Amino acid sequence: MMIEQRKKIYSMSFTTATLLQHESIMFAGLYGDLGDWKSVREKVLESNLLQSRTKNTADRVCRELISRLKRLTSDQLLILQDGITTDQNQILWAAVCKRYEFIKDFAVEVIHEKFISMDIDLSQIDYNMFFNQKAEWHDEMLRIKDSTRKKQRQFVFKMLREAELLSSDNIIIWL
Image 1 (cartoon, rainbow, N blue to C red):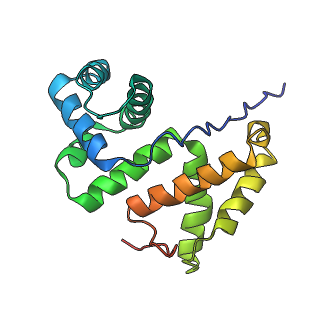
Image 2: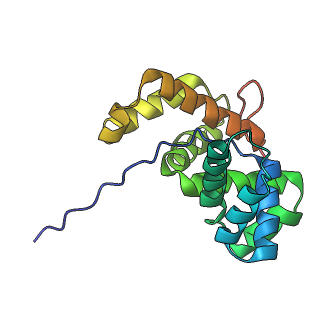
């Protein structure tokens, strides 16, 4: 009897926030003080710690950051709170990769492969080719509008820059 393997579905909703290092460090500190993510969420929203103009924006960003940070280990959260900037940025990139399998796959299948082959220039074409390749196997990606695809690509490249993994001229940075 053949067991059908479940196909993973990519969550492509990663344009709510980039790394937001300052805010993520604040959330990690609150989690260290309060001990649970529900309390962190309540504190952030009650006190408008994100300084958002609207409650909807604050709620959306809060939900996004918590969904990333709760995937980190306790040691990673401690580094996020007390580590040096480079380590904090790498932890935040890891959190994004843990939250979004599409981004993780891009990091492993494209960025890592380019780096080890000493092709350190990461282009928008690389991203587009990866996206198109994955779309052949992921029907959910076929419904994404071109304008959304462009925004998603911009967010991935911006997060890579914020994590100090990509230079301003799209060169993969060795750490």
